[in-house]
Image: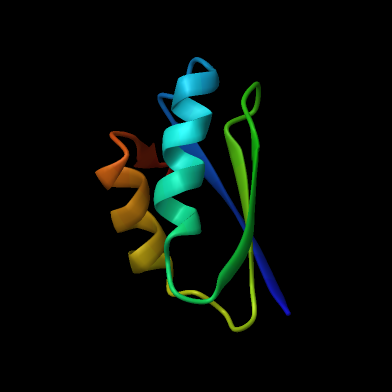
Length: 68
């Protein structure tokens, strides 16, 4: 089990959370996505570590950006 936390910039509402959760959750191996709207923290749980570039691409597909 692997868990990584990222900061997503630009989320302002529940729809934003749903979009990010859907896109990141669709990545192969991802078993859970937890989003904290006030802080922008997105915690990704997966069977094996997920490449940050794949997470970044999924977040961008949802219309947002990873910090850093």
